[in-house]
Every structure is written in C-alpha cells, then in structure tokens.
Image 1 (cartoon, rainbow, N blue to C red):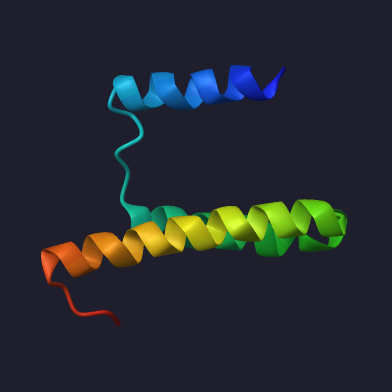
Image 2: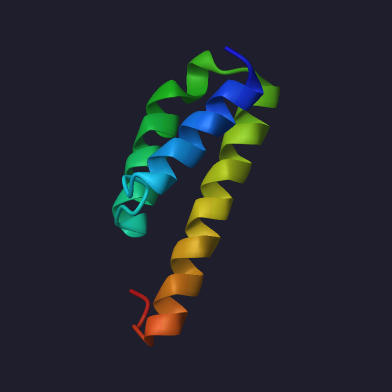
Length: 72
C-alpha cells in the first residue's frame, strides 16, 4: 500500500460521510492506542503519530471554540 492509497481511503471515508465522528472521542481513542503502542514504536513513528494527535486535538479545540462550548 502506498501513501496515495491511504489518502484515497481517507477521501472515500469523507465522501461517504464516515469521517464525521466525534472528535473528542477520536482524540481520546487515538491517545489510548498510542500510549499502548508507545514502547513498540521508534522515535520517527512517535514524532509522526504525536503530530497527528496534536492536529486532531487542535481541530477539536477549534470546533469547540466555534460552538462556544467551554473546555473542560
């Protein structure tokens, strides 16, 4: 599988409406998975995956701000 194949999957999920998931739950689930996998990952994988997590968190923060919700 190539990076383009994976991006195509992302695009398809979005077009099909299956990418519209609760962002807070997604961030929490991803953080849990990453915490469990941390010891098996190399430094490059950790850097990449924590960047992905930070991007997800930022998007969740931005969505909450647009809805005017208080952060907990």
